[in-house]
Amino acid sequence: MAHNVKADINWYAGNPSVDNDPTLTKIVKDETAKFAPIYVQEQQLGSDDFSCYQDIIPDVYANIGNGGQVSLHNSHFTASDHLLIVGGQLFSKKMLSDF
Image (cartoon, rainbow, N blue to C red):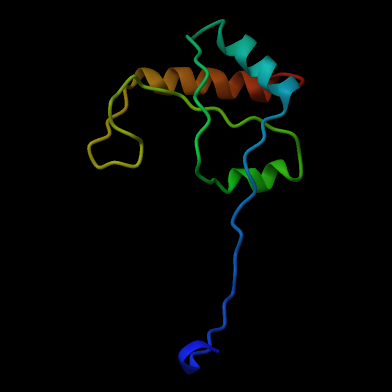
Protein backbone atom coordinates (compact mmCIF):
# COMPACT_ATOMS: atom_id res chain seq x y z
CA MET A 1 0.00 0.00 0.00
CA ALA A 2 1.36 3.34 -1.04
CA HIS A 3 1.19 6.01 1.66
CA ASN A 4 -0.88 3.64 3.85
CA VAL A 5 -3.97 4.28 1.71
CA LYS A 6 -6.45 1.55 0.87
CA ALA A 7 -9.32 1.89 -1.61
CA ASP A 8 -12.21 -0.36 -2.51
CA ILE A 9 -13.33 0.03 -6.11
CA ASN A 10 -16.66 -1.10 -7.51
CA TRP A 11 -16.09 -1.06 -11.27
CA TYR A 12 -19.03 -0.76 -13.67
CA ALA A 13 -17.98 -1.34 -17.27
CA GLY A 14 -21.07 0.40 -18.64
CA ASN A 15 -23.60 -0.63 -21.22
CA PRO A 16 -22.53 -2.70 -24.21
CA SER A 17 -22.10 -0.91 -27.52
CA VAL A 18 -25.11 -0.42 -29.79
CA ASP A 19 -24.92 -3.03 -32.54
CA ASN A 20 -27.64 -2.65 -35.16
CA ASP A 21 -28.85 -5.82 -36.84
CA PRO A 22 -27.69 -5.58 -40.51
CA THR A 23 -30.91 -7.06 -41.96
CA LEU A 24 -33.16 -4.78 -39.93
CA THR A 25 -30.94 -1.78 -40.67
CA LYS A 26 -31.40 -2.32 -44.42
CA ILE A 27 -35.16 -2.62 -44.02
CA VAL A 28 -35.36 0.58 -41.96
CA LYS A 29 -33.21 2.47 -44.48
CA ASP A 30 -35.21 1.22 -47.47
CA GLU A 31 -38.59 1.95 -45.87
CA THR A 32 -37.56 5.36 -44.53
CA ALA A 33 -36.21 6.41 -47.93
CA LYS A 34 -39.77 6.11 -49.27
CA PHE A 35 -40.92 9.15 -47.27
CA ALA A 36 -37.86 10.96 -45.86
CA PRO A 37 -34.23 11.61 -46.70
CA ILE A 38 -31.81 9.27 -44.95
CA TYR A 39 -28.28 9.77 -43.77
CA VAL A 40 -25.74 7.51 -42.18
CA GLN A 41 -24.52 8.98 -38.95
CA GLU A 42 -20.82 8.77 -38.18
CA GLN A 43 -20.00 6.27 -35.49
CA GLN A 44 -19.31 7.95 -32.21
CA LEU A 45 -18.27 7.11 -28.72
CA GLY A 46 -21.00 7.19 -26.15
CA SER A 47 -23.43 4.88 -24.52
CA ASP A 48 -27.12 4.22 -24.48
CA ASP A 49 -29.08 1.71 -22.45
CA PHE A 50 -30.90 0.79 -25.69
CA SER A 51 -27.99 -1.59 -26.26
CA CYS A 52 -29.24 -3.71 -23.36
CA TYR A 53 -32.37 -4.50 -25.41
CA GLN A 54 -30.17 -5.50 -28.33
CA ASP A 55 -28.53 -8.08 -26.10
CA ILE A 56 -31.93 -9.80 -26.02
CA ILE A 57 -33.46 -9.19 -29.46
CA PRO A 58 -32.15 -7.92 -32.81
CA ASP A 59 -33.06 -4.28 -33.33
CA VAL A 60 -32.10 -0.96 -34.93
CA TYR A 61 -31.23 2.28 -33.20
CA ALA A 62 -32.17 5.10 -35.57
CA ASN A 63 -32.17 8.86 -35.17
CA ILE A 64 -34.55 11.37 -36.67
CA GLY A 65 -32.59 14.50 -37.48
CA ASN A 66 -34.06 17.97 -37.62
CA GLY A 67 -31.22 19.69 -39.47
CA GLY A 68 -30.50 21.85 -36.46
CA GLN A 69 -27.18 22.90 -35.06
CA VAL A 70 -28.04 22.11 -31.46
CA SER A 71 -28.01 18.61 -30.00
CA LEU A 72 -31.08 17.04 -28.46
CA HIS A 73 -29.85 17.35 -24.87
CA ASN A 74 -29.48 21.11 -25.00
CA SER A 75 -31.80 23.76 -23.56
CA HIS A 76 -31.79 25.59 -26.92
CA PHE A 77 -33.01 22.57 -28.90
CA THR A 78 -36.25 23.04 -30.82
CA ALA A 79 -37.82 20.39 -33.00
CA SER A 80 -39.83 20.97 -36.13
CA ASP A 81 -43.46 19.85 -35.96
CA HIS A 82 -42.75 18.01 -39.23
CA LEU A 83 -40.62 15.58 -37.20
CA LEU A 84 -43.77 14.30 -35.50
CA ILE A 85 -45.07 13.23 -38.90
CA VAL A 86 -41.78 11.59 -39.94
CA GLY A 87 -41.43 9.88 -36.57
CA GLY A 88 -45.02 8.68 -36.71
CA GLN A 89 -44.52 7.28 -40.20
CA LEU A 90 -41.36 5.47 -39.19
CA PHE A 91 -42.97 4.09 -36.04
CA SER A 92 -46.14 2.95 -37.83
CA LYS A 93 -44.16 1.29 -40.61
CA LYS A 94 -42.13 -0.58 -38.03
CA MET A 95 -45.19 -1.64 -36.06
CA LEU A 96 -47.21 -2.71 -39.11
CA SER A 97 -44.48 -4.63 -40.92
CA ASP A 98 -43.12 -8.12 -40.62
CA PHE A 99 -39.81 -7.02 -39.23
